Each structure stands twice: as structure tokens, then as C-alpha cells.
View 1 (cartoon, rainbow, N blue to C red):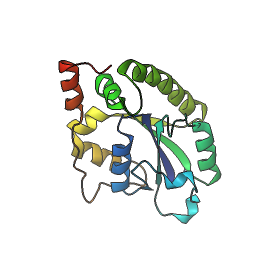
View 2: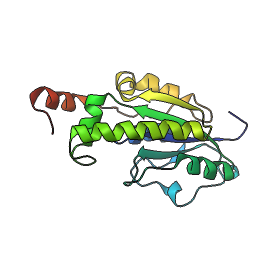
View 3: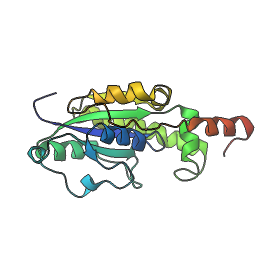
View 4: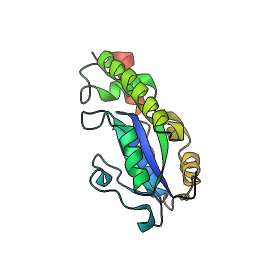
Length: 183
């Protein structure tokens, strides 16, 4: 990374844990929004106006559209930030089931959509020359304190004063898979 403050882009397919990862980033000192709405969609702060990094969350797709990562990177750089990607992935069984019915009519459609969105996400990161790390939902669930400390060790962040209580939401999706498939 350069001497500029990082702007962390949290990316992942729908239901992968982008909101959880963003909330961890905020607890570790980043400025941003942990929910669906993102204030940085309306206005990005200039890098020299803040004393800490920012985090900007984007699910793939977001609000029904595939985000243009290169445009986001350009906007960040123009505002003086150095973009850095944090991609979160989740086990396929839990991830596709988490998308039904809110984001896809069935698991097969969710899987197909994820195939496309993963390709676009990684091509976008690579095409915009954004360095990145990949985290797994399952590792955050299995090692919540370690992962929160690790994320806090990223440039400009710190271990959280209050650790987030991380819940494993995968079990309900595996239970559904064992008992009756979602179609």
C-alpha cells in the first residue's frame, strides 16, 4: 500500500457475509455503514478530511445491478484514497440457500448467478489494479476473536474495543439441505 489512507472495498455475492465483515471493519475503526444503505454511494469524503480509513460495502449484485468496480476504484482514487479489496466467500450450500427466495427463486438460479458475479468481481478487482484479501464466512465464525484482531491489524485499523458477537447462520441452511431441498 502507498502512503495514502486505505479505502477498504468489502465485496461478496449476496448472502456471503459482506454486512458482517463491514461491521467488523467499523468496530476496528473504519468509517462506513454496516447495513444495506451506503452513505458513500452519495458522497465520498476526501482522504485528507478523515483521520481513519473508510469501508465501502458492495454485494454482487447490489440493488439489482452489478457494481462497476473500476468506477468505484476511480472515484476512490480521485478522492485521494488507496482502494484495497476485502472479498468474503461462504460455503456454497449455505450461500445459495441464504439467497432463496429474497435474491433468487431457487438454489440452481442462485448458484448460476453466483458463478457470474464471482467472475465479474474478480475481473473487476484485477482490472482496477486493486490488491485484495479473501476471507471466509466460516473462518470468521470459527475464529471470531482472532479474525477481528487480524482485521484490526490491517493498515489504519485496530483491534475492536468491543468484539462483535458472531453467530453461525450456516446450520439452518445445512438442516434445510438435510431435510428438504429448496427449489
